[in-house]
Amino acid sequence: MAAGDGIPLDHLKVVDNDFLDVFMPYELRLAQRRAMVWGAEAPDLQPNAYVGLYLVRLEPAAGVEGPPWDTVGRTISGHAMTLLRKVLRDSDIPAVISDWEFLAVLRDVDPQRAFVVAQRFLTSAGESGELREAGLLTRVGYVIYPLSPQPNLPVERWHLLLDLARHMSERGRATASACGFGLLRGPNLVETGIPESDLVPLAFQNVDTLTKAGVLQIQRIQVLSGMSPAG
Image 1: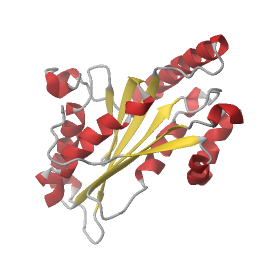
Image 2: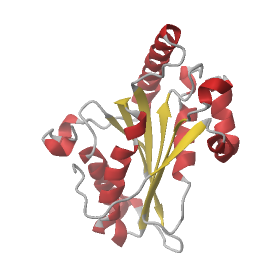
Image 3: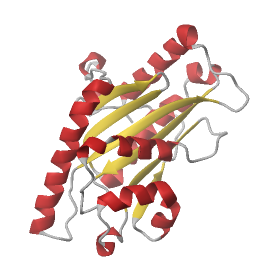
Image 4: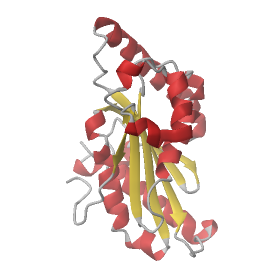
């Protein structure tokens, strides 16, 4: 259920980086244990519940100077966070990363439906008069974790996944007002036997090669028009 379906927005408390440094290692460790237990019981069985890290980034359009933070910028940033919170569930965690970057941590994500929350948010952002008048583009990049059946990424290095989500947010045409890309494991990953500690650095180096080989999969968000956030 999304917040727009009846859950009051103030129920979704916005957290900061200090909280994330404690919370994210816990969430990743839990996801790793879940994957290892299920993998031992059935090696070909992928976990049916993942953690999604969704990085939202606002940036000025080409040739446009961004609004000053101490006046219009702060209001626009708050508006973007409001749009984001409307598409989240009460179990999701919204966070402020910096003035123009936000993070949403989603628990129990179905990988093949992971695009839905990004699609709903980007649709609202693309129709936002406030963002359009400010000359700001909206970018979303997300990573669905664990990326490998061998999830051995040191949990204290969770920022690598955040950076990878940011890397995904930088894909796409610079002229689009709102666009997004997600990264998740591909259909051929299990047979390669690539552990996560190797896979994450490889994803930074050449994610397109990995997706062509079916090791990873990229979800491209199709931004819809005329769709309400809860639709």
